[in-house]
Amino acid sequence: MSDDSSSRIVAGLREWIATAEPGAKLPSTRALVAEYAASPVTVQKALRTLAAQGIVESRPGVGTFVRAVRVARANDYGWQTAALGSPPQRMPRVSTALRTVPNDVIALHSGYPDRELLPERLVRAAFARAARSASAVNRPPAAGLPELQAWFAAELGPAAPGDVVVFPGSQSGLSAAFRGLVGAGAPLVLESPTYWGAILAAAQAGVRVVPVPSGPHGPDPDELDRAFRRTGARAFYAQPNFANPTGARWPAELGDRVLGVVREHGAFLIEDDWAHDFGIAADVVPLAARDDRGHVVYLRSLTKSVSPAVRVAGIIARGAARERILASAQGESMYVSGLLQAVALDVVTQPGWRTHLRGVRRQLAARRDLLAGALREHVPSARLEGLPQGGLNLWVRLPDATDPARLIRECEAAGVVVNPGGEWFPAEPPGVYLRLNYSGPNPGAFPDGARIIGEALAGQGL
Image (cartoon, rainbow, N blue to C red; front, side, top):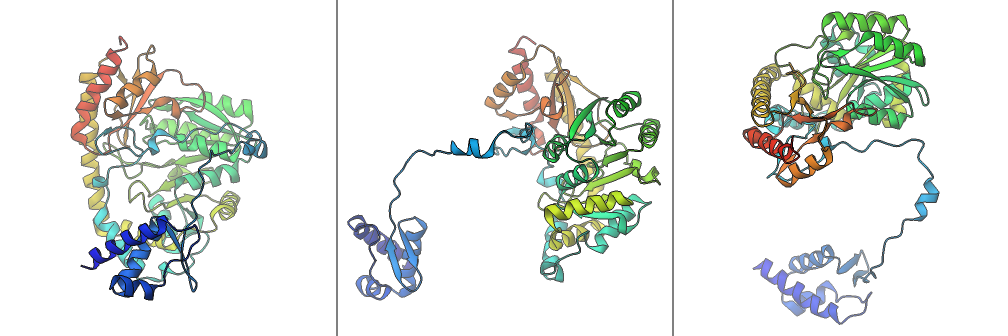
């Protein structure tokens, strides 16, 4: 009855407002109660409905008034062109991996695991406990909660809790490392292809990118050595385990050779261990665990493995490098939410965390094999650049004659969203690639997605 009365008042007031001048004052609540024989609560509900519709505005202590109607006019932001000037360098576009898409499409583009691969029960319980703790109101230390610092250090092995700086996600950590260790205008060596977020962070930090080709088993140490000698670079960003996008995992001997090159040039290796929790047929052994002289700056994020809502990452660095990175971090974000740090620590220290990771390993193996098999069946002209032993993605080489823009349009029109490989190269790509994520939703539709990709290629005569 109250809802009916409220709707009746809304309808009556709308008729009154239609003939009133903008800025006219509505009758008082007492007058409306008497006119409509309704309670004050019902009248207030009607007024809130009108305010939410943008028809009236309330001025506390004064009354409720008819809102003035804005005259529609074209937006003109042309003045901003002169005010902003030319950008210092072209920023990469935000990756397709961050797109949100409708539920009825086959999403092979995503950068995050599906919800069913997350420890949802552990996360919900951790948020409930953290909300009742002091972390919900206290400001944490700038470098992170001591208990979380200790956990990151213990996970790596040869590190002290004081070596750890906690960040609000790996993207923030990369930006701080590039600014603190490289600096604007200085060269930074990157694998090519590499993580699109690293390319973006480098552009935002103003560093000069130096690409080094990297294949299914990692980069060529001789090429890396030449890049250091040619440019005088003092940092190399890489993902030695299950690289994004290629899935490459460096053999142990390659890791030793790369460490040797880095040490010879008095440089840093910024090791991004993004897929530490996503091993399938192999476990992760970070290069940082073999470094005792502070050449390796180690980055590990929990955002993908715990929850996208828990943006927490840790950087382990030693000596002056750690101080540079911490100073850079404080200049950007001051500190990381203590509540999120407490949630992350709670989840990864629960007995169920390791059980969850073992289950994720089995699920990722099944999903990877399902998508790889479907591609072999339905897209025979494509070539998998190796079957990854971990991570979340397949790296697929398409025929050189492929028109990638047309392929992506036609796939999306047919209900499949894919990630173009060109986004993952810091320079011109040497071929046509797709990065396909096998951790996304609805894996049962992977064969249909592969079939649609194959049909789009066949439409190009490939």
